[in-house]
Length: 621
Image (cartoon, rainbow, N blue to C red; front, side):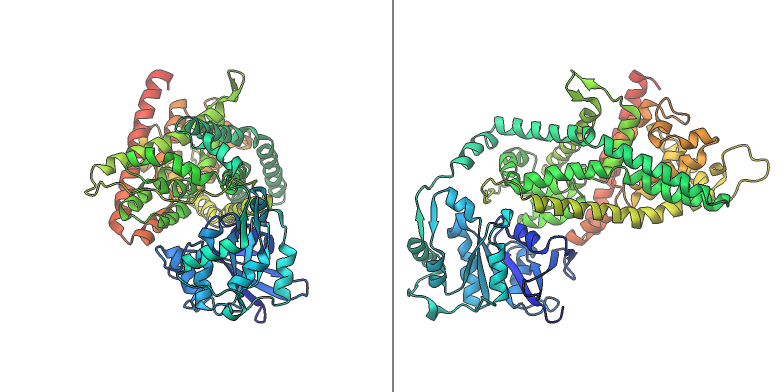
């Protein structure tokens, strides 16, 4: 790759830059952070028709090179050649939204002023034509003194022309002498002159977006639409995933039996079957549900709906001490609190940013989904309500809603302790509605699957082996009458912790599982699988699925009150060291991390206690 063409994509947010990056690189891309900062670095590779390799860098979106956030500072420093790890860029692809040239050309003019080699990519040309806009790209190239290529990234249109231009090295440093017009004044005045010469507006209105905005941005119908949309998503998570989950569960059961038949040593057999296969299989089974949830989130993001949801919720969120800009970081936290907390860098007000960071862990991240799915399937019957709604889906929706409501309540409480109670106006660009880019959605799902499976193959695999060891040694003494795990290190620790959690209805097996779950929430599923596999006293109990085993009717069953209490515990408990480490890195304050940990565990204990006591009294033990 030493002789590869090095290009970087630069442009405003919502210009279609990421879709273009996905179409150029496909799955040949890597995501990491820049050294010393928590800003995403996305690099990919592709090959031109001539066979020449290209290394492409997708820079964070920015409206100007006058940076106001860490993301924008990275883009500025790469453009100015200040980041040594990126080295020299042969060309910058300036991606602009053809429907919003007046705004997006501002960044292009700044790039031209720097004298960097540029190829202007005029994206979303189909949308511009649909609105009746006529853009003379030849004149635009002449006025700017840089080459121009038309694309429609979401449909792969124009990609061949772009690759042809790169192959022929049809890019260059801006040359004012090539312009057939003497542009003068500020960049804003120059843009006005250019648009007057190269763009003809036949119809100024985007009728489709205007019609949809009347629904989605309506103060009443918009909120109803958002609630219905989220409700449907959580129904689909259970309804669509069931056959895939059954298939995965069957496969791991068969695989465990197959491998177990060839391992005669009892301890080694237990390690492989009960520790590794059962631990990994107990988590992988929830992959379909996670991918279905992410599918909907990616579709909403690609369609241009998410910024509108932020705008719609701004007034409500302000009353709770948050900003409308907090919506997208909080929505990202449904995937994982780590990128959600990192995304708060887009919130310029330090007060709003800190409150958003503190409540982000209350959003129900994908790591909670395996825990919720296990407990819901064990204790909530699979039946329809009113002949339409899946009861398990309703409970899942209620758990997500509880996290959201709790976050708003916590933010409201924090608001009373803030000295600065001034309001900050929400200013953000609302992109045009568009059909989701299927390729970008597919790549997003593939990335999420890789991340999830990597966690299973890494931290969960390691913790499953460690937990098996703690649950297996020391071996029981001669004449022991209890299951072997009762005499192990884990069993001893579980019995020590059990009195602390007894008011919540947690038994000693749950106490054991909560400890490795501090590393990652979904580990609790693998941990329970290992603990109960080693707790079983007969083959029939061991062959049961974990959900059947812990259900009220199971051979090692919990009470309904215990199941509900554990569900509520995981709404609040900060079982994720990566999240706490990210908060420390983003705020630079151990005090903030300590406060977050204490208040979340305190809420978890209080709400689980209330749930267990009420459920025991009214639903029975």
